[in-house]
Length: 196
Image (tube, rainbow, N blue to C red; front, side):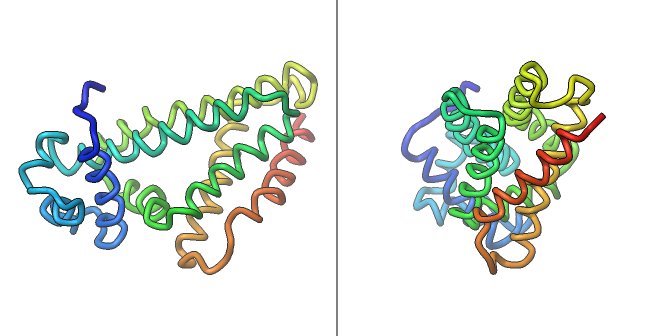
């Protein structure tokens, strides 16, 4: 990516998550982000081109970290059920632990322009690749039927997890998210295994 890194970069990213969650992307001036981060306005431009670049960068950082952690966990000797459950649990746990990040990823990023969305989709590819890995392994070892359309199945899995989190955000985090992982996983597996 070639971005300047360091402590201030992290401060700005974390400040941006908080400011955007509280004010909405369109009302989050760079000056507000700078103030929250405790840096001068001009310092922001040493690390980011503009506000859009901050939004993309925070998504790249947070999603990139999540994908790396998930890859590490999914390399363990686990069954297909355990791998899918682990991925869902990690997704829900990360967002339940950071309400501001959940608001940004579920609501604010989706209101961005077309160019921004295409950059976000590039970042999402790594995550979707994790789902593909689980599905293809399951098809290879007979856990899922060979006839399973893994691209459609990936959309179903991602869409279901995403909708569960969005609903939780819209209901202002009034219940725990992580306990929903197991029933969600079971529901998905039942549907995917019976696919013919």
